[in-house]
Image (cartoon, protein in one colour):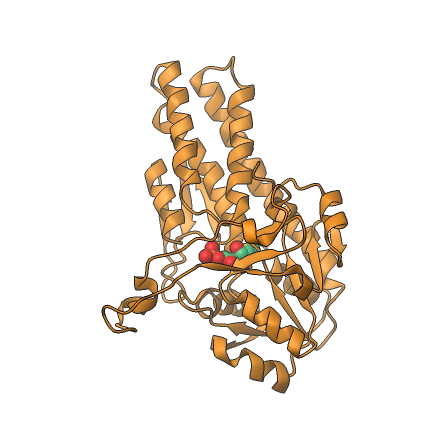
Length: 351
Ligand code: MRU
């Protein structure tokens, strides 16, 4: 569907569309080393919960290729170190740990295999996770599109589209599915400070797909909800606790509060790999804190005086009371969420 590829495995390398350079430049980064892939995840060359999971799975394959000629024990130790390195990249998106756990299961099941055979099995698994993610997003989009009517004006935050997944999107997947059904949809994209995933990435990919999009600064959301008016908010998620509390990009919680104040439905679209049923509630979700320079030196400009305190959490938690529905590849869950989420199975449990 997309004119671009978020990530692809080519010639024994993980090739990533460098999202730090969008929308100005469309350039790809080739990762042949685990360390290159790990830093690409840390620096948001690849970002978005499902895409991080797929990239990490391929990262384990890079680890296997790096140590292919080593003696068996050293090879397997290198695989363990690779998984540990990738697990340290970003703490909030549970899809990362979900994907790494699947790769570890392949390693454990391949006890009798030689290095080359195990490496081939790991690549097959990473490719399966990659292909499955796109299929899951398409199913999720079909379910969620039922909620959207012709002429809807939708507000979204951050980027939960093709760029954040293997290629279709979660929140934006609903919009693509609705558009494919002939519904006209208009999107308002919060710019999403401090790293501007909304204005740089969401606006860019919606424009590529021919969806009408208007970028707004984060502090305009309330007035746009009233004036447009907005018919619903749709966001993605990095981790969803057993009670339906949702961790997503910083600012999502504020948008949910505003949506409630304006009586606008607030929808969360996420694959089951984003559920973490091992956590009873959102307060237990680890929240990544990023470098202060992302706020004080925004895109190379001095945007705060030297020496002031800076707080830069990358995510926040929206309490389930503010969530109208959660859409996954299994269907649409409405509050109270615990029973439906538990039935969906919690395949994303970091456990
Ligand atoms: O820091 P990022 O850009 O990785 O944050 C991404 C988000 O918060 C997305 O909304 C979330 O991962 C869902 S992606 C389908």
